[in-house]
Image (cartoon, rainbow over all chains, first blue to last red; front, top):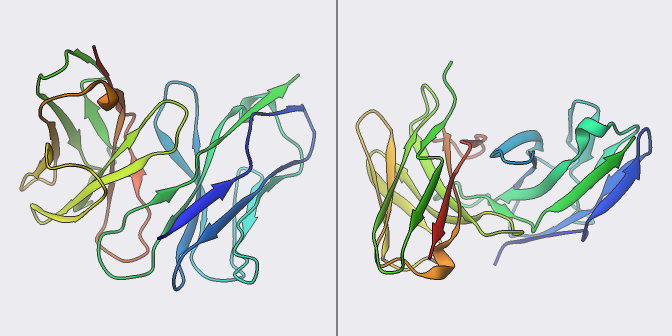
Length: 114
Length: 113
Protein backbone atom coordinates (compact mmCIF):
# COMPACT_ATOMS: atom_id res chain seq x y z
CA UNK A 1 0.00 0.00 0.00
CA UNK A 2 0.87 3.66 -0.06
CA UNK A 3 3.42 4.85 2.49
CA UNK A 4 5.65 7.77 3.43
CA UNK A 5 9.04 7.57 5.13
CA UNK A 6 10.66 10.59 6.76
CA UNK A 7 14.11 11.04 8.18
CA UNK A 8 14.13 10.24 11.85
CA UNK A 9 14.36 13.04 14.34
CA UNK A 10 14.75 14.89 16.42
CA UNK A 11 16.72 17.41 14.42
CA UNK A 12 18.46 20.25 16.27
CA UNK A 13 20.02 23.19 14.43
CA UNK A 14 21.32 26.63 15.21
CA UNK A 15 19.52 29.71 13.95
CA UNK A 16 20.38 30.59 10.31
CA UNK A 17 21.51 27.03 9.53
CA UNK A 18 20.43 25.22 6.36
CA UNK A 19 17.64 22.68 6.81
CA UNK A 20 16.89 19.49 4.93
CA UNK A 21 14.26 16.97 6.04
CA UNK A 22 14.18 13.92 3.79
CA UNK A 23 10.94 12.34 2.64
CA UNK A 24 10.42 9.40 0.30
CA UNK A 25 7.17 7.76 -0.70
CA UNK A 26 5.70 4.59 -2.15
CA UNK A 27 2.51 4.94 -4.18
CA UNK A 28 0.86 3.85 -7.39
CA UNK A 29 0.21 6.43 -10.05
CA UNK A 30 0.82 10.11 -9.45
CA UNK A 31 -0.03 11.16 -5.89
CA UNK A 32 -0.12 14.73 -4.66
CA UNK A 33 2.56 15.49 -2.06
CA UNK A 34 2.35 17.75 0.97
CA UNK A 35 4.32 19.07 3.90
CA UNK A 36 2.32 19.91 7.01
CA UNK A 37 3.66 21.57 10.18
CA UNK A 38 2.41 21.10 13.73
CA UNK A 39 3.34 23.68 16.35
CA UNK A 40 3.17 22.67 20.03
CA UNK A 41 -0.40 22.14 21.18
CA UNK A 42 -1.90 22.85 17.77
CA UNK A 43 -3.37 20.98 14.81
CA UNK A 44 -1.75 20.57 11.42
CA UNK A 45 -1.12 23.49 9.10
CA UNK A 46 -0.44 23.06 5.41
CA UNK A 47 3.07 24.34 4.65
CA UNK A 48 3.35 23.56 0.93
CA UNK A 49 2.23 21.12 -1.73
CA UNK A 50 3.04 19.81 -5.21
CA UNK A 51 0.61 17.97 -7.43
CA UNK A 52 2.75 16.67 -10.29
CA UNK A 53 6.30 15.61 -11.08
CA UNK A 54 8.94 18.39 -11.08
CA UNK A 55 6.57 20.83 -9.38
CA UNK A 56 8.17 22.91 -6.64
CA UNK A 57 6.05 23.90 -3.66
CA UNK A 58 7.19 26.87 -1.59
CA UNK A 59 6.00 28.91 1.39
CA UNK A 60 7.61 30.98 4.17
CA UNK A 61 11.10 30.27 2.81
CA UNK A 62 10.53 26.50 2.72
CA UNK A 63 10.75 24.57 -0.57
CA UNK A 64 10.23 21.01 -1.76
CA UNK A 65 10.42 19.54 -5.26
CA UNK A 66 8.35 16.55 -6.44
CA UNK A 67 10.92 14.07 -7.76
CA UNK A 68 9.20 11.10 -9.34
CA UNK A 69 12.42 9.40 -10.45
CA UNK A 70 13.61 9.18 -6.84
CA UNK A 71 10.10 9.14 -5.28
CA UNK A 72 11.16 11.96 -2.98
CA UNK A 73 9.85 15.29 -1.68
CA UNK A 74 12.59 16.65 0.56
CA UNK A 75 11.89 19.82 2.57
CA UNK A 76 14.55 22.56 2.54
CA UNK A 77 15.04 26.01 3.99
CA UNK A 78 18.11 28.15 3.54
CA UNK A 79 18.14 29.90 6.92
CA UNK A 80 16.01 28.62 9.79
CA UNK A 81 14.63 30.69 12.65
CA UNK A 82 13.71 29.80 16.23
CA UNK A 83 10.06 30.17 15.24
CA UNK A 84 10.46 27.23 12.81
CA UNK A 85 10.69 24.84 15.77
CA UNK A 86 7.83 22.37 15.27
CA UNK A 87 7.03 18.86 14.04
CA UNK A 88 7.02 18.48 10.26
CA UNK A 89 4.96 15.83 8.46
CA UNK A 90 5.35 14.69 4.89
CA UNK A 91 2.15 13.29 3.36
CA UNK A 92 0.70 12.02 0.12
CA UNK A 93 -2.80 11.90 -1.32
CA UNK A 94 -3.27 8.90 -3.63
CA UNK A 95 -4.18 9.58 -7.25
CA UNK A 96 -6.80 6.84 -7.50
CA UNK A 97 -10.48 7.66 -7.33
CA UNK A 98 -12.18 7.47 -3.97
CA UNK A 99 -11.64 9.11 -0.64
CA UNK A 100 -9.06 11.87 -0.59
CA UNK A 101 -7.25 10.35 2.34
CA UNK A 102 -3.84 11.60 3.37
CA UNK A 103 -1.08 9.13 4.20
CA UNK A 104 1.42 10.66 6.63
CA UNK A 105 4.99 9.95 7.60
CA UNK A 106 5.86 9.61 11.26
CA UNK A 107 6.92 13.24 11.61
CA UNK A 108 10.26 14.94 12.26
CA UNK A 109 10.67 17.13 15.31
CA UNK A 110 12.78 20.21 14.57
CA UNK A 111 14.33 22.38 17.28
CA UNK A 112 16.13 25.60 16.41
CA UNK A 113 18.44 27.07 19.03
CA UNK A 114 19.22 30.81 19.12
CA UNK B 1 -13.78 32.89 6.30
CA UNK B 2 -14.13 30.58 9.31
CA UNK B 3 -11.61 27.79 9.70
CA UNK B 4 -12.19 24.26 10.92
CA UNK B 5 -13.30 24.09 14.55
CA UNK B 6 -13.53 21.09 16.87
CA UNK B 7 -15.08 20.45 20.25
CA UNK B 8 -14.31 19.68 22.95
CA UNK B 9 -10.59 20.49 23.12
CA UNK B 10 -9.88 17.89 25.78
CA UNK B 11 -11.79 14.91 27.11
CA UNK B 12 -11.20 12.22 29.72
CA UNK B 13 -13.15 8.96 29.59
CA UNK B 14 -12.87 5.53 31.15
CA UNK B 15 -12.51 2.23 29.36
CA UNK B 16 -15.80 0.91 27.97
CA UNK B 17 -17.46 4.32 27.72
CA UNK B 18 -18.64 6.01 24.54
CA UNK B 19 -17.52 9.40 23.21
CA UNK B 20 -18.73 11.87 20.58
CA UNK B 21 -16.41 14.44 19.03
CA UNK B 22 -17.63 17.30 16.86
CA UNK B 23 -16.26 19.20 13.90
CA UNK B 24 -17.42 22.23 11.93
CA UNK B 25 -15.90 22.40 8.47
CA UNK B 26 -14.40 25.45 6.82
CA UNK B 27 -16.93 27.61 5.01
CA UNK B 28 -17.79 26.15 1.61
CA UNK B 29 -16.12 22.78 2.20
CA UNK B 30 -18.35 19.76 1.61
CA UNK B 31 -16.04 16.91 2.63
CA UNK B 32 -14.89 16.02 6.14
CA UNK B 33 -12.16 13.54 7.10
CA UNK B 34 -11.20 12.27 10.52
CA UNK B 35 -7.72 11.22 11.62
CA UNK B 36 -6.29 9.68 14.79
CA UNK B 37 -2.84 10.85 15.90
CA UNK B 38 -1.24 8.78 18.63
CA UNK B 39 1.51 10.40 20.66
CA UNK B 40 4.69 10.76 18.63
CA UNK B 41 3.11 9.38 15.45
CA UNK B 42 1.72 10.75 12.22
CA UNK B 43 -2.05 11.00 11.80
CA UNK B 44 -3.89 7.87 10.62
CA UNK B 45 -6.96 8.15 8.36
CA UNK B 46 -10.16 6.94 10.05
CA UNK B 47 -12.83 7.79 7.46
CA UNK B 48 -14.22 10.50 5.23
CA UNK B 49 -17.76 11.84 4.75
CA UNK B 50 -19.23 13.44 1.65
CA UNK B 51 -22.92 14.23 1.09
CA UNK B 52 -23.71 12.78 4.49
CA UNK B 53 -22.35 9.34 3.59
CA UNK B 54 -19.14 7.54 4.45
CA UNK B 55 -16.83 7.83 1.46
CA UNK B 56 -13.82 5.73 2.39
CA UNK B 57 -12.48 4.18 5.55
CA UNK B 58 -9.10 3.37 6.98
CA UNK B 59 -8.10 0.38 9.07
CA UNK B 60 -10.34 1.12 12.06
CA UNK B 61 -12.96 -1.19 13.64
CA UNK B 62 -16.73 -0.59 13.34
CA UNK B 63 -16.90 0.88 16.86
CA UNK B 64 -15.53 4.02 15.17
CA UNK B 65 -18.48 5.59 13.38
CA UNK B 66 -19.45 8.99 12.11
CA UNK B 67 -22.09 11.32 10.80
CA UNK B 68 -22.17 14.29 8.50
CA UNK B 69 -24.98 16.81 8.66
CA UNK B 70 -26.59 18.92 5.89
CA UNK B 71 -24.47 21.92 6.94
CA UNK B 72 -21.36 19.69 6.39
CA UNK B 73 -20.49 19.55 10.08
CA UNK B 74 -19.56 16.11 11.38
CA UNK B 75 -19.36 13.86 14.41
CA UNK B 76 -16.99 11.04 15.28
CA UNK B 77 -18.37 8.44 17.66
CA UNK B 78 -16.28 5.83 19.39
CA UNK B 79 -17.98 3.04 21.35
CA UNK B 80 -16.48 0.69 23.93
CA UNK B 81 -13.42 2.85 24.46
CA UNK B 82 -10.07 1.14 24.88
CA UNK B 83 -6.88 2.49 26.43
CA UNK B 84 -5.24 2.60 22.96
CA UNK B 85 -7.92 5.02 21.77
CA UNK B 86 -6.11 7.75 23.72
CA UNK B 87 -4.93 10.13 21.02
CA UNK B 88 -5.41 13.49 19.33
CA UNK B 89 -8.39 13.30 16.96
CA UNK B 90 -8.14 15.63 14.01
CA UNK B 91 -10.86 16.73 11.65
CA UNK B 92 -10.04 18.06 8.19
CA UNK B 93 -12.32 19.66 5.63
CA UNK B 94 -11.93 20.04 1.88
CA UNK B 95 -13.79 20.33 -1.39
CA UNK B 96 -14.65 17.15 -3.24
CA UNK B 97 -12.05 17.27 -6.00
CA UNK B 98 -9.14 14.88 -6.49
CA UNK B 99 -6.30 17.15 -5.55
CA UNK B 100 -7.91 19.54 -3.15
CA UNK B 101 -6.02 20.42 -0.01
CA UNK B 102 -7.35 19.34 3.37
CA UNK B 103 -7.47 21.94 6.14
CA UNK B 104 -7.19 20.71 9.71
CA UNK B 105 -8.81 21.76 12.94
CA UNK B 106 -6.91 22.05 16.23
CA UNK B 107 -7.98 18.58 17.35
CA UNK B 108 -9.61 16.97 20.38
CA UNK B 109 -7.27 15.28 22.80
CA UNK B 110 -8.90 12.16 24.25
CA UNK B 111 -7.51 10.35 27.26
CA UNK B 112 -8.95 6.94 28.13
CA UNK B 113 -8.25 5.71 31.66
